[in-house]
Amino acid sequence: MIIKAQWKGGMAYSSTGDSSGHEVTMDASGAVGGNDSGPRPMEMVLHGVAGCMGIDLNVIMRHNMDKVESIDIEIDGERAEEDPKRFTNVDIIVKIKGDVAEKVAQRAVNLSAKKYCSAINSLNATVTTRLELNGELK
Image (tube, rainbow, N blue to C red; front, top):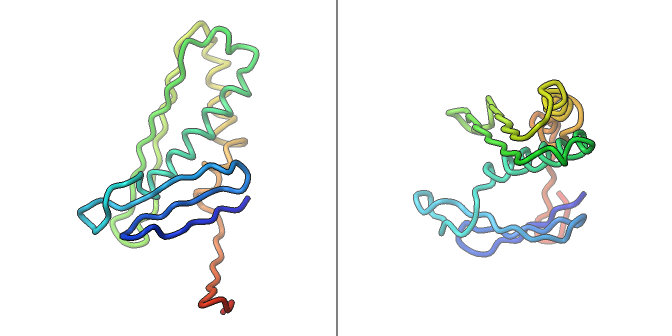
């Protein structure tokens, strides 16, 4: 999966993923010099966790989805005070309404969080960085 981001001026970046082709604009708040033209990058991390877990729940509970009235996912990400201000704690509340057995719903939440949700399980990933400056890989 490849994401390409392009600076759009100020502190805004537009990024597009090769697997979906969808474009997202991210920006900083006005308080730090941005124009508030899109979500913050760290918000996008939590958006990814919510979407990933939600899709997992639908797949895992596919035989029970006709009984589900709604699924809401609330995520509270706590960040470190010092740079790099990573997430130190992520609290996820999955709210399911409908005639679904607790055992089925809890199993789906646990399987997503511990096994299937790539976004959750990437929060502590190994990251490598490289620099290409003026067309030359350094």
